[in-house]
Image (cartoon, rainbow, N blue to C red):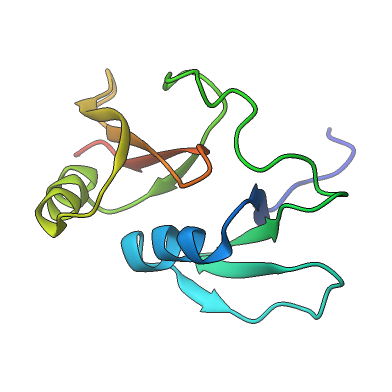
Length: 136
């Protein structure tokens, strides 16, 4: 028996250098919703992604550095977080057709279990996986 039982991921917090560039990535490109945030003493933004919140903190003296500490590592097997969509391949094609400037880490591929995934980086180099469940 476990000591506690986690229900779900509540939020992901990312330190960023440019709130507007990050908003364009998470809201305009990935379709998340802007949501209000408490009046903290530091700048930031919150976005809703399904049941999960994305908390952005504008880089400041107490936040640590913006972005991924291993920005130069262009690997799908390094630190990342993933968003599930109904059809990752269709999402990839929509993003390509949009003309959006994507920082692509890995184009779509099918995992051994049949799921499709691709990886892009946000404006600060955080690795973001876009995935869909295997077809049944």
